[in-house]
Each structure stands twice: as C-alpha cells, then as structure tokens.
Length: 307
Ligand code: OXD
Image (cartoon, rainbow, N blue to C red):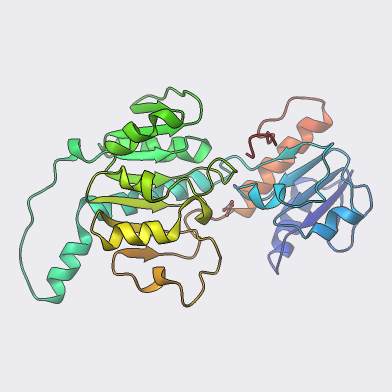
C-alpha cells in the first residue's frame, strides 16, 4: 500500500514516525517526493501543485478539523472521498478553551482585574446562572462535547444547527429562520461552524446585534465567519461586552489589526484545539484498514455542504 504524507514544517517527521508505527507494511513517501498514484494521501493545507502531480486512488485524509483549506484547492481530485478527522483528541481541548472563556465572562474576571488594578475590594453580586445561556453555533463532533461540558457546569445550553438535531440538555434551534430567536436568548455565543459559502460573514452587524446587550462572543471556528468591523463596532458601542477570538481572517493576525489592542478582546493564536499526532494517526490508520476491508468509513466530507 502506498501512502503520501504532506504536512508543512518539521512536524512531518513526527507524523511520519507515527504513521510508520501504525501501518508498518505501508510504503510511505513524504511530499515533495511522491508516487504519481498513491492509494492514500494524508495532507494539511496542501499546495495546489501537489494534486497536479499526484492522484490518490482510494482517499484523501485531511489532517485537521476544518476542511475549508483543502476544498479550496482547485486541483483536488473529484473522484476520491475526502475524509476529515473526527475529534481525535481535539474535542476535550475545545471544551476546555470554551469553558474557560464562558467562565471568565460569567465570573466577571475582567471586572475583577480592573478592580485589582485600582486596589478595589468589591465583591459583585453573582449573576443568576439560569439567565446566562450559552448558545453554540454548530453541533458537530466538537460542538457536542462543548455543549455537554457546559451543561455539566450548569449553564443553560442552546444549539443552532442547519438541520434539526436533538441532544440531551440542549435547547435546539435549526435553520436560518430560527437564528434571531436563538441569538436573542444567548448570553455567550460560541461559534463552532465550518467555513462554507453559507457561514462566511454570517456574524455581521445584524446577527451580532440580535444578541442581548452585554453578550459575549467566542470564535473558535474560522475568522471569516465574523465581519471584523461589525464586531468592533458593537463592542465599541457597548452592545457587546467582550470577545474571545482564536481564529482570524488572516493568520497570523496582522500586527496592525485593531483586535490586538482592543480592551474587550482576548486574542489567542489558533490554539483552542490543536491536532494530536498520535490520536490522529491512530484514527486515520483505523479508517485505512476499513477502506482496505471494504467496510464503511465515517467522516467522509460532503463536498456540496463544504464539511
Ligand atoms: C483546524 C485545525 O481545522 O487546527 O482549525 O485542525
């Protein structure tokens, strides 16, 4: 079995070692050394030139959660399945990051930091949790784990999905028509949507303005889902209380971007959930074994939906 591995940077050595350990019989090549027709390609943000030269015959595996960068490659072959990672160690990290952001807002840590700077000892009345609903946009593999972590902390959790989805302890909303009602009752909005033509620019002045006064926004999905200037305008007007942003339209975030120094924005460098090499390779290898045995494989991307 021939496998092509393409991962930018020096991490490729770790990926290679993990793959060789999981599939000892496989002939593994590391891009740019590549057979023209490998059985499988394992890639992360590949250059378009890769698929000019290489045509995988069985499947292409995306070594990250979001497939938007891969689907945007114009030379991506149309006749092989694209398979995404499912959790593979990322969901628990996402639940940690989002819980931290929600708790920071709920326990008013920014206000206490300000009080500390001015030497003020002033306990604040606790916000009733029942009125502090967290709304999750997107209940995929990661969104579901985030929802159950927040529900376990006692927050009312609501979820918005493209199609109706029923989850225990999550109030469900589906479709564009339900978005204003979903947003209207959300104190912390958590974006976990894939980047698709339908979701890019979804969070603009109108939709973010439908959040109640004092709401917070957490974006751990893709930068292009939020319209930056609209988010800034709503923070500056005081309609929104704060934002925790891990993803941006351009990464690294350009040095002159206003997000860097905004007093109500927390910026982190796309670290909410990083790919775990061993877990990812174990999952990919298990799926390759299933392909080889002619068994069904989960996580196949629907190209028409973009995820
Ligand atoms: C992603 C990832 O898709 O880091 O953002 O896996």
